[in-house]
Image (tube, rainbow, N blue to C red):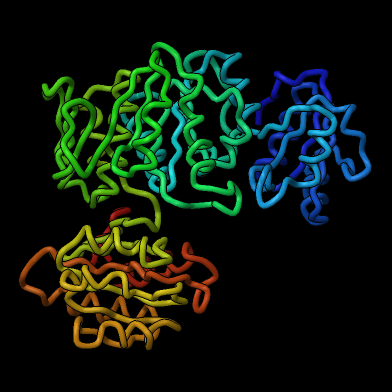
Length: 467
């Protein structure tokens, strides 16, 4: 925790007292602001009060006495309708901002550097990978925002200190002064339309990451979807812009359609990294993450050799195509985060000899959309509430066995995969389902998978040690 001095001697309303709201309120108080904080959840109010936050019921408070309203990113700004605090703030003519906006002002005062990442998919892995590359290269970067720590739980900004922030569209909507040194937009697909109204508005909010860029700033933007490609024209001409693709080669930009990352300018290859053997960066979606991380690292002066070395040691995010162990030639991959078929598709597309553990509470459509990948699945091990429905989809197309529990599925899949003489066998937990029938969340399910793998004989866990 550090003081937010940009609002010293000002009056600030704070609505939303979860993790980031409470941290921001305390930082404002430390910086000399007069804080009036509230949440419509009584337990949240009492928890924040116990932590030292100054509490005021904002329902009856005169917003004209405030200089700003700090709004939690989870609270509706525009759709489906503005929150009551937003209405009051607009009537009072005060600015409506988020904790990340205040943090951005603190960075500007200190002269710190900001790498900001947004997009519909891939932003968490890209953020974590950039932080890993920076640290590997000796850049002591802080990582947070929409991933990990709330921004005011990071270290105090200093001149030239580096911050790598994942930013959601909700956070960007509350950041009018956002101006990253490196801005990254991975992709745009329909999402959060209940909060943004239309896809066009959602895309426009994402594009604000580039709006204030000037000379020496670097923009990296994916061009594999039409929504994202259309935003290239919105990047200021003064910024250095690189297109990124994993579907096509690019005469200028960063591309990895075949798993070999190539940076080109005017058709001339400048740098190259082979991503295909990096176990935590399997699949085209991860090649895009790596391409974005490459561009960010080069922008801050990290050498190609340092980037490649760091990518080889990147462990991946927990529960997201995370290779947790090997036994002989068999890899064990934890993709518990794949709670729907679209997410599981990325994992199935990344391997060729798959012993697939799937099931839980299925989303609409089940696994019908995954049929193009059934040829990659050697055998499926079905668990949870969706097992019977999945059996009907797989019947006659993929060998399967009903296992019921995750522990039984791991045991049977490991036994079958170990006997496979073709090589490159992968025991893959990518459930294509929510976990709530058997586990409280996907993290607990992923931890249970790791525990079951660790209990196998002669297995090498990636965190060290033979079990």
